[in-house]
Image (cartoon, rainbow over all chains, first blue to last red; front, top):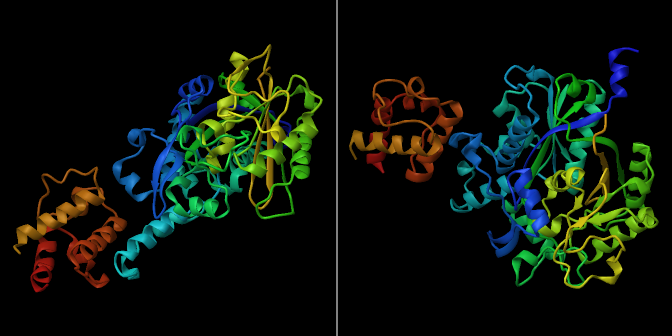
Length: 417
Length: 83
């Protein structure tokens, strides 16, 4: 068997991760807040709309970028760089000595370019819409590969880079792309995950509001409340999570600390509606991911839901989960958006990260802000408001769904050689 | 407006667009590019800020006039005084 065929069978492992979330800029801080019930949602002034609940990150932007890079680049790029640098540092790779042409960068995004375009339209509105005042930075800021490309410029990576546009399934989709490229032997290290700068665009907020899907609550930390009877919509958030991924044989050869193994995935399409989810396709997606991983539904310990706190979407996802996991007494269901809002393109990758420490502590973080459980979202093993300690957590299934009917399920297992 | 005032305007713009650079000891007669890490995009930013902040238009053919603080002052001072 030649090397390339051999790689197609390779097990793919996570050997590092970096993140910024509205409630933490390291995995330790983020995890602590998830176990302590600390949400990260605040009020933010949104152009033309006034104050809205939003998830805002406060990582140190100057840790890895000069002030000029911050001025020229985008917020998505800055989040991506911070997370990627942290992911490499966390992996223990001797990055300076590493062959940068063998590193690939695959960053999931829900959208890109709205922020920068809105800013420029606003800017020229101050100059009577004279396009001579439109910045020459517009195109490099708005090209779809921008956040991934900024990582490569900042880190000197010369392997492939691009973004994966997959609506709110993008965080998982970035990781899936990395698994595939590692198995094809295209790269030896992948930096992959998802980022979101969406709180900077009023259009996303206004669009959800017009759709009747933007969260409000007098206590802003309770605005994102999946499965609560009185939930009323999404809290838009920024954030990012980038992972260092390698083939197992490479990771073992360099004596890497292995965080987890990606054992299966599936991405499918509803083929039914622009916005409304489709529980039948979601269930198919989860079943196909289980088949891809070669495991039974009952072997999954945690299903991290996508649920975004919309009245319809949460019910649909619970319906799909009940169909697949209804007979699995040791499969627990939780949700991370109740803490951090909906981090859009980062959501899948960031929510997975918040659950990975369960492999060590065997604690399942809850979904918070459930004052009155919606009977239509009730499932026996929904972990509500308080963390749940279990005997062992070995397998996590991470759901992420998005508009235009894109579904993704990623399955990660505690590493055992 | 004096040439020194125009030089200060240019330095203020550079401080905005290249905030990591030290502009405290720039030599007037030496090309800005030889003293700082400025690229062609930065010069486009200087042109944009002259337009936005001061209503000064620098046609593309005249970009070389922005090479040093001295040449900036020579070229821009009459434009400021014509306003």
